[in-house]
View 1 (cartoon, rainbow over the protein chains, first blue to last red):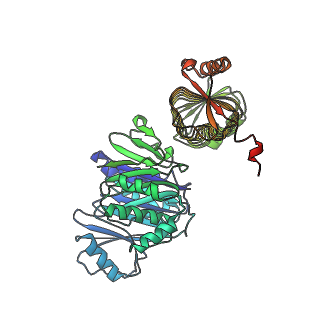
View 2 (cartoon, rainbow over the protein chains, first blue to last red):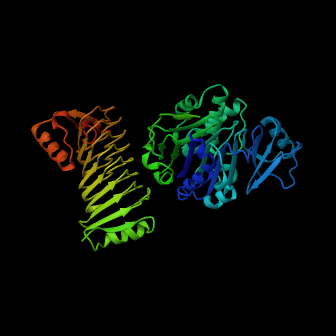
View 3 (cartoon, helix red, strand yellow):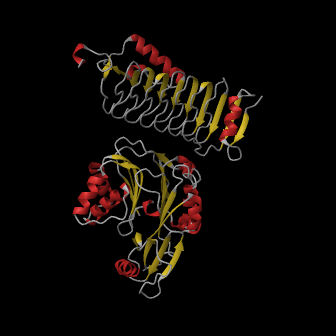
Length: 290
Length: 223
């Protein structure tokens, strides 16, 4: 069992409320994943200013000194977010040079990612989620089945620029696909099955596919149980496996699109009483772009 | 005497259910369910419970005699393992609605998701609109009535439950076949539609059930 919540805002007037809304949603899926929680926020210009790149890392050394001017450094538990007025690959190279052992868990010009272990509500406070702003966000509470309860095994898996994947379920043939991707030169950060899904999607997006096509490909290639929420710098997509035993519910209004494992995570969203509420069908990709 | 009212914005589901398990009134109203799980589960008296809003998992589970109405949508497993009584969902229901139910009537005025009536054992389920894939899987007894369409794999490995569908069936599951509508089937369907409060014409429905090739062992099934 795991909990997923995601919110894609259509109405810019809601952007300042992204954090409080997402925080409320996260608090309703704690029982589904009490061992760790991760959060991704898109478009918070205090965390990643316009024209900047942001990189989230785990286990950054205390004396981390990145050889770039004016780097913004924010510490949030196990996660450290670094932002600088350079291209993402320039920032990434500088961080790798300064801290070769640090695990990169998110890179983008829109995105900041936070991961950690412990009670999800305490982690949300550590991440200062209640004060986040932006146009899109997601959170995942984890009940681990396939790999260890450590920050690196926490979702979202963000392995491409501004991309995130969160997963409720377990992949059966992830080791096979991992070997195939490794043979193509893809490198992995964890033993987690969901990371294989994220690496697969990233490889398809890098080939020029959009989210919808990449996820249709995933349905053909992966066996197992999954409800997935996948995001990038353009939008938001949901897909479930053919058996669809992992829950998912979507609600839509003119102001937002929201997805969650359970309705109770959507119950306090503004305008929920007039929302179109439905469950995604098996192996059908639902995608929204801004 | 008016209905006893519980507001789940201030009371817990455990407090509500404890009150419903030892009722002191004949009617109850529940406000602000907000998708909480297990609301009105395990009620075993002939009380009326009206829930105003959307409920989470296993609402009205194991119901034995109560009349429970959800004025909203229901999450996974509404009225699962019902023994008797009536459960009505005014909106849509998530998956596994009426799962393993032994008796009583479950009415879903909107649509039900996947696995509606899975392993039903005598319950009657009437759905106003559509049902999702894999519904009535291993259904043993009872009747499932669908006012709209049914998804893929309907009635897979079905035993003796009877299924009536007014619209299209995506596909039939293993050992589930269409069967002729005889007079007694039209009569029982009319009765079920009336009990559920739908005015569909029974003549518009088709009947599905078991071919009985899977669970009756023939000589050529031996090893």
